[in-house]
Length: 220
Image 1 (cartoon, rainbow, N blue to C red):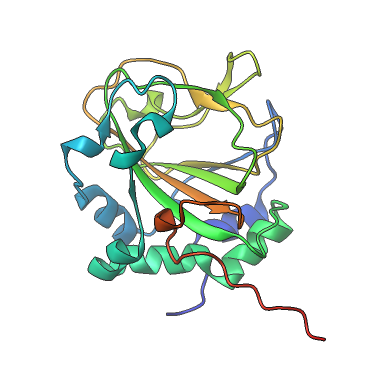
Image 2 (cartoon, rainbow, N blue to C red; image 1 turned 180 degrees about the vertical axis):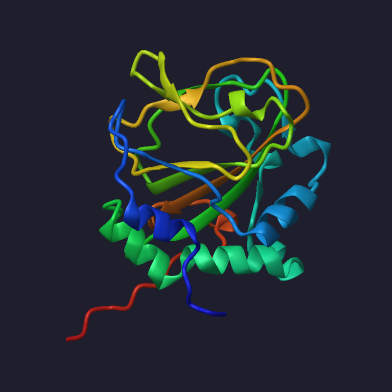
């Protein structure tokens, strides 16, 4: 596998982040066309579609789907996408431009299929997550209204990410990164790829694209 980085890293290196309500990067054309095609073709079954989750995705943990080793093995396009995100070039840009601490972190890629009734309560992603990138992949003509809400701690939507196809919002989780999804109509399916790098405390290793990150021990 080539060690090149995804195209979004070039954009990150050339842009300044927005600061309201917290530091974040708004991106377009995040994924390669082949990866988009694979993610649109992927139909994991009706159980993977989520309406009202009570504001928390973990209420449906057993139905969530990931770009895990088995998924990579069956689709070379998704395997390439995972390798690009996990490349040393991508990691270095996420570190140098965004300030992410990724040395011992592992890649987690989740495909979310949300339907009418879906909403997410305000949360920050602090804890085991070192980087969060939410990529919109909805093709419905209403998708521009389906972006992630960046919020105040009280749950007010301060700004909303674009829901345009293949756009994304990236941030480094902190105690200020309140975000969620204010309940609003969803016609059809809201499709999103969630990209996270997670630290060694992440217990659900079956969700990881390559398994836990192996870090070389320091030389004596």
